[in-house]
View 1 (cartoon, rainbow, N blue to C red):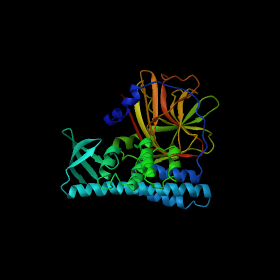
View 2 (cartoon, rainbow, N blue to C red):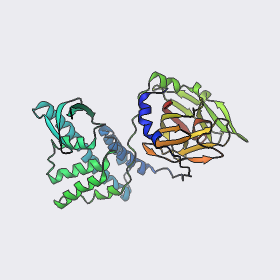
View 3 (tube, one colour):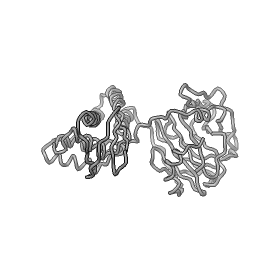
View 4 (spheres, helix red, strand yellow):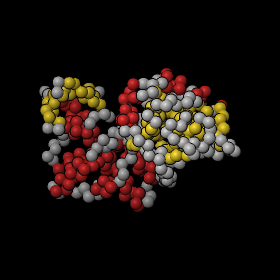
Length: 366
């Protein structure tokens, strides 16, 4: 199950290993309106132009309360600026491909333009070709390309640059504010956008990976089991009819309604050193994920999940445990006598009568 890219992505996890255990308060689930706005912002953060439009349409159907309508209006305007920014990047790339423009300045460094095809940019930097799609393009590169189309000296265009940097997952809100301050000094009215700088950015929309045959095999129900709370310990039960793989290979699990809290566990015991990456769909606040006791007792190290589609990176090395959710480090809560060295299984803890989808599960040894 181990793949080299997984280890590469988790090296920083292993390098900074230090467990911090504390109880995390369970936040209430978002209201439908809050969730709708969060999803629009997440689509902007993920540079999902088609998704921005779809999420805006869904959010617009919830109009009817003045505070929400005001915030939605601001988000709609920001979405328009972000969409037009990426359209400008694409137009500029096609223009450079069709003309004799062969240089572009990025961070005060002159780079050679090589080609732009199928929304993929190739530039030559310090003797090496670098390839970027619109999804992985660094902000400095995206700005430099967009400014081939949008004059950076035009105050109105600075609103576009600021919106991109304010809403993008890789953006910098300090620089966004600088652009907006410069636009304001030039008498461009953007005061209605400024409250957005105080809104906590959501995690970007998660794009589920296409599963390899090996990962699909890992997600077969036979490799997983349910554990329900007995009088003393957690009691293991086969998944049976409670689980099935969908067409994409994802493991869809419906927990029994009469069992109380339920653990969904991967059947193989975790090695003393491991790394894993997990994608979940349909997670709800109050559910948790982590290391649960092999013996079925109360010992566990868990961390609470946010709602929605979630990507988790977790590892144990040299007797210490670390995890990230959406790329941000999270803390663990200790149950029973658990320590980072406790023999453990990977587990997802969910309420009875709920549904959770394991959309990908990669496990390896660093």
